[in-house]
Image 1: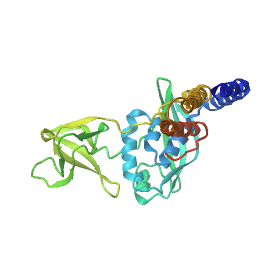
Image 2 (image 1 turned 90 degrees about the horizontal axis):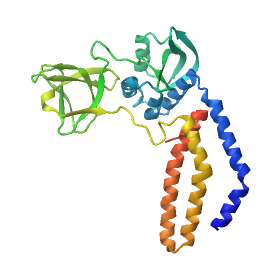
Image 3 (image 1 turned 180 degrees about the vertical axis):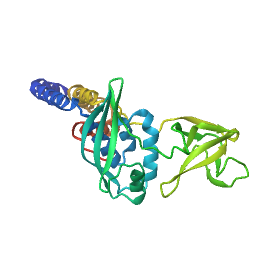
Image 4 (image 1 turned 60 degrees about the vertical axis):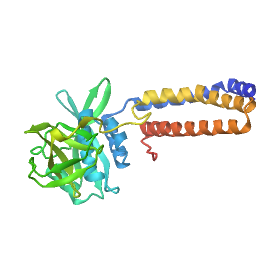
Length: 308
């Protein structure tokens, strides 16, 4: 059976050529990504609540902004979506921006008031200005979804205490009332620039979306602050070019080899139970990895968002 399969593959060279040609054409069509397309990708992932995936398009130093924005306005309201209506690219000196008109669907008063306060809501649309930044030939967008700068600096970190629970107080004093207690290994946000008289400041988000500072003594904690705000899946960090190359390799090399190996197992000395278990595990691994790969490829090419 494997010999017959290899014979069929040899007679199907044009098919593999057409697959290669098709993927190459798609790369050329989408490699010239406009800045507005990057904004669409970011909002598309955001609306699907795939926050980790949306962070791929965001300037790394803005990940704390996205994390807090999601906690305040999106995490507890699945109906809210930011619909991209139109936009255009502009330049100011050496800086490039995308001026986007966004419709806020099913938004409650808290998110509307947030954009009003920042002079970005005109009564119908959110007028957002995304800055385009590049690092190592990768293009990102930057947003200024800030918090109250009078209470917190821009240097916010995600951290946790790995040993004990933490009691947060309303004021930096042991005489102040305990407002909240969290268990060990629970993530929370601290202001890295605040350390006064042995006290640290933490950012907490209330049910109405408002943020407030709470304090805890640094001497009674064992803080681990090298935690990433977001993590990507296996293929989440790959560019469209790399995804397309992987697709070609899978079609031309990996998939045929897996099929040939399966026939060898079935035709070898292993019992039917062992062969069946091997094939079942193999199929599950291929399906899991293949689905995530396909989801990322379709989104990068066509902005088609499959559920994860």
